[in-house]
Length: 76
Image (cartoon, rainbow, N blue to C red; front, side, top):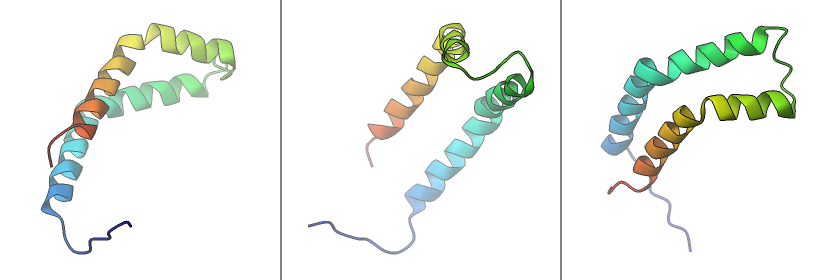
C-alpha cells in the first residue's frame, strides 16, 4: 500500500534551490549550446548526429549522470 504525504516540504525547497543554482552555473550553457546546434542546417537529429553528439560530449553526459546518481542516492 502506498502512502501519500501532504504538506510543505523544506527538503523540496532546498533541492529546488540547488537545481536552480546548478542550472545557472552549468546546465543552461549546455542547453543553449545544444539548442543553437539543433537550429542549424548541419544537425538533422538522425541517429548519426545523435551518436556523434554522444561521443563528443560523453564526459559531460557522465558528469550529469554523476549528479543524478548523487541526488538519487542522497540521504533524506
